Length: 182
Image (cartoon, rainbow, N blue to C red; front, top):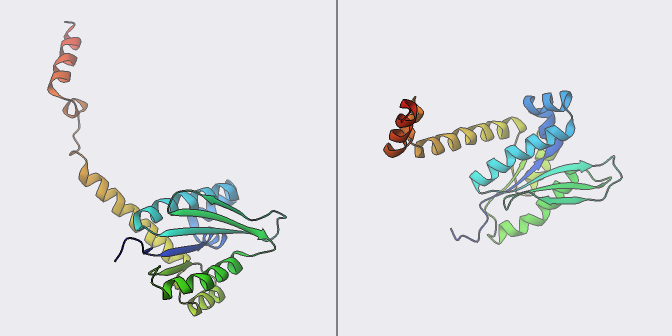
């Protein structure tokens, strides 16, 4: 596969996911919506980078009189706040319609939409997108975190109980001299 082909475009219905993931729902209820958005964006940042997905997390501003806003978080992740009166569902549907042509031209290999909204699921599948429920996305993110930890830990030196084993012999010798008062 040529490197110019995007492996997948992942569109995430932000508030739908926040309302479906127990950890994000708890954060939303006890700390606030902004904190829950931050946790979702952090989780999707790591997931997208590990998978190599071009991800957009969409939050709707349906009831707020604000213009649309796009924030580029990383090369893999963009957060999009819709226009006043526009839902995340509408934005996702329009994006799927426009990306369908890029899939046909083999510029994108996959288009994935993460939402637990059943009507949205059927609509985006009509555009050729794959669908992930909020629960499935949560499982994939957790699996990816475990894979990242395993990959990172396998590259680290074996863990030992004592700090002295982690430093070189010359430093250990100098510390011994200091301990003895020399």
